[in-house]
Length: 390
Image 1 (cartoon, one colour):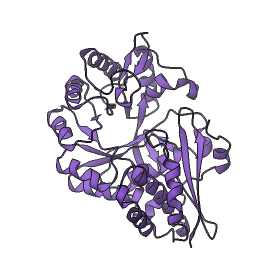
Image 2 (cartoon, helix red, strand yellow):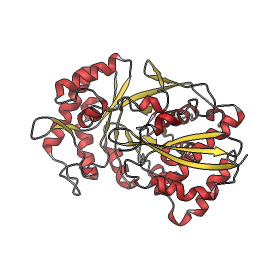
Image 3 (tube, one colour):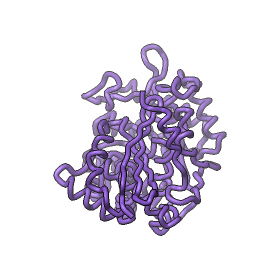
Image 4 (cartoon, one colour):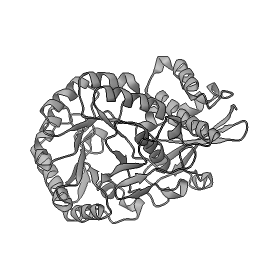
């Protein structure tokens, strides 16, 4: 069996794209992966297409050999888009390797350890503040609406949710505080202020009062502050019993100083590529939960990252805010690693997301692993092609 064709496909997903990789063998077997180029990865499809000739004619069931070859050929530009492109190829090859044997990808790695994956509702409120029109749902304009929505999430059986910093703007309407991504004033300084912290406390108090004391609440602050600001945030949220405070930082020592003073667990590392980038964060004991992006790293590399984390007594959670196929890839990671904390999943999305790949089955706050071969789901190529990017 040899790799014969590699094709990238992109589909409209409202405020972003869902991108897919299709790998076909010379005997007609097809493997799929999903990747993301809408959030900091512009040009990723072109990188995948540039690397594709390097793997045509190779055996897809020897995915370790193929990815090792790609790493050799990109060694001078390690990480970044090259790593994400290799990950997309790796994940598609894993789908082929499993399907060729009539088994799940999890079975390739000796799993699953668990067949029901605890999940939390990610981007609670954030998409409804920013993208409600794309989803066809009412926007969240104030904290009363946040409280109603939080109660709905609880009633649906979810045991955890993750929110961002949602605060009122000059017009009184809620917006997502995101200077780290340049969405409004405050960059590049990334300074904190008392008003923002006070409104953040109001937001978290609204959610905690709506969901009760047992619900897991995660707060994602991304890159929106520097070390000083993250420390002030950690102090401000102490009373709300967060499951974790999520912080993005590329300085392991700085993150470790935050972890040592924080009154809640710290989760981080979702933007890192490969074991080499995780290593200093583990050596500094900089986080309580290591967040691994399986779509950026590839499942095989992500499993190795999780094994490193296990040595340092650190549990892992997949970074997963994409489409349904990405959720199945991240669920496979979650099913196979011993040191799982919880799995992220986006519930809010465009209404046609489920046309591309069947939605995950979620019961009582747990994703039920599918039993089919490969990733366990089938991709609807016609549906993807029917929604070209706008």
